[in-house]
Image 1 (tube, protein in one colour):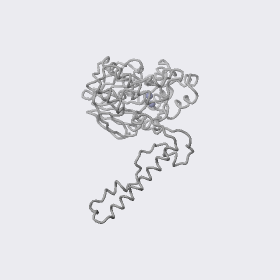
Image 2: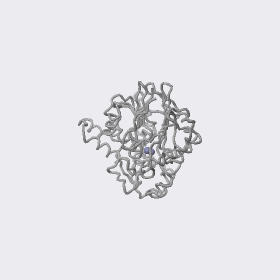
Image 3: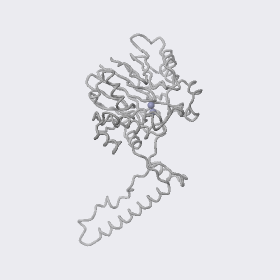
Length: 392
Ligand SMILES: [Zn+2]
Ligand SMILES: [Zn+2]
């Protein structure tokens, strides 16, 4: 038996439970912990029976409930290393330094290293202390003592003129707004995309208002990126959680290291791919022979072009690392899809730039006469409520 229950899908939050008869995995946690718990209870998925949380990528609509949920359930969280790093940066309060301050800090640290090296040399050459010589590796290492802000460092290496401009120590991946600016408000909505840190903090605060113990609340404030256990996986390499075999694959999207997945257990396969700008060959290949296929059908091209987003945002959504349109999804279903799934679930539909009917019609036309009661049933994963469990 395999079961997929989509708890939420869209730019305001994504999460789904994938289960075999022995193992249960939550894929993404993009709603507040409280709302995720509520939806799980609503569809009969006991949260305390989850074995792990698996993260596709670090965008807020996929992780906003993660810090609270993982602590509450005390289960491991699986990321790629790059996604985990990006998430930690996102969760770490920003400090701002000017380029001048950063240069001064580097100069000071270099001076301290030189002094330490000189001291180590002095001690090492003093008579009678040879056996007590300090650890060369520690003293003589040329590694910088402080963490260099990533993009500041690379910009400095390339000689880019950063002087006089304030730069964030923690570079953040650019993210794809799926809300027109007139609706977006980074400080209150977890799906607002201009400031992931504050969006995440807002979601965490939302969770902290109720039924959260004082100790948990305090621990989250002190260390927002703490997780009970972190496991790393890599795209292209199988991993197993319980009896579910997982194949992660790279998807083209503007995040640190975004992945889609194929879950396999008990002779059944579930393919899972949202947040991708187009369908590259590796994704088409990975999604073969699936019994349930969950695929992004994000926007209608005309609605997006004529819609409320600023042109720059439209460009990003349309780009090769943006989101999959109804047409691109349909083209895959028409040309590449093997027609073997019982259910095709259209997911991550934009509320501003799509209509369920448009997505459904495009997919149904592409599936054509392969559509039947037993196979290729097209379903839409909603944002506001869970989709009834699909069980095979
Ligand atoms: Zn995303
Ligand atoms: Zn997303």
